[in-house]
Length: 164
Image (cartoon, rainbow, N blue to C red; front, top):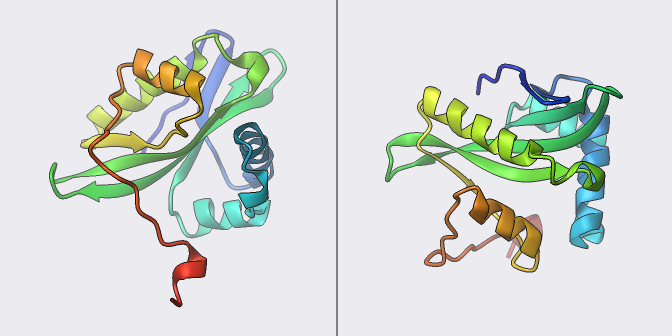
């Protein structure tokens, strides 16, 4: 996906580059802690570097605070294909903004920008998952105009299941 840097108030959203694996890992660790899933998080900074920049399995968007030049958020994306739409799709794997920066419209601005990019580049849809007990995120996504798809069930094989 092509993504041009985007400024919103005191923040800049940019596409991650090789060498950003450490900060992405740090933010993902915080997200897993926030979700109570830290024991399930096994990625290393090197894993993230390899997945994003060597294997090219997705992209990461980083949110910078212009005042401090600190990275305050991340959105990890992967790509899929919708046979129904006949177009590629974007899957938001993770979306996290540090708590002290929430409520400033940054997340909404990033979602709006992602929708615009998806439309401009011919993507058919944007999908993501949200934990049911994360009420504030569910409310945020609904307020942004997203629909919750109750008619679909998520099934999964984890790597531990591959030999069964």
